[in-house]
Length: 373
Image (cartoon, rainbow, N blue to C red; front, side, top):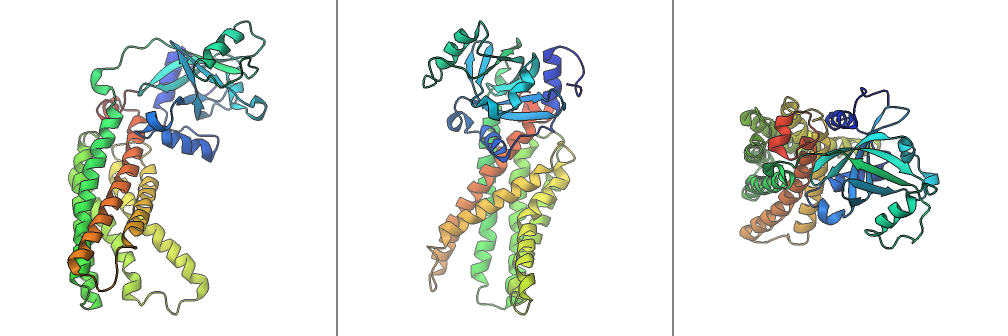
């Protein structure tokens, strides 16, 4: 482990927690870690946790989801099909590791216990108390993690990630719903007018949507990111929203892509869609990077959030909208779809925000944000 300074397991583990460059061995592991970081993790990923350690030879920081059994100050991880895996070999000697338990990082030391060890049978029996479907007599290696003694977390920090997520989810859902009402109403109001007037009205409404969404998001961020300027966040959100709406109206203003060579149509649509879903996140990243490390992931997280939200919006409104409907009904359907879209977008971005704050090296952000790393 040449990438960390020598010292006690606790010292090394603290350094690991403050490192935000952890890698996962596969896409499946990354997906599982995303689920573990969700506010609903305690329900969706029972008996699962995240390990953080450094590779024994490479020194590379690694994050890994594992199933575990806990008994007091020991965490037991069974290595099923050990011959097809290599990660557990990092623990052939006592190795510092951090484990995410009880909404905080717990430093400790991990070591492999093989089936020929004198303590193996008793340890396997302890593992089976939480996983009774495992064989009575085991042969799989067990990684036994002995947790360092740690003080109890302050009451204010317990469950802070869930509180942050619900606060963000509530404020951002309301903000995007109110903001989306502007283009929804504007689209109906100017539907029978000229193309230029329709485009202008939608751009203004898109700016209003960005302003409202930015205000609600900025209000939620102000309590967890010290020093963040709500005005800058609002202006960035407006800029991103206007850019997204501008690209969305290109087909309307240019008669679609008629006359374009077929080989250029698909790349043009893909490029336009990519810019549309990343526009707000990229603009907000310019502000967020001043306050949080590793903030670049915000662009991808918001892109996924908007893709999911727009998919939900389409799924909700398409079966309900029909030609010739009364304007009030059309608006109501749009608002319903907007609510579903807003909730989806808020849930995804909130999950990433909790994770991002949890990974920060700055104690102030962690203390008021979501966890007590």
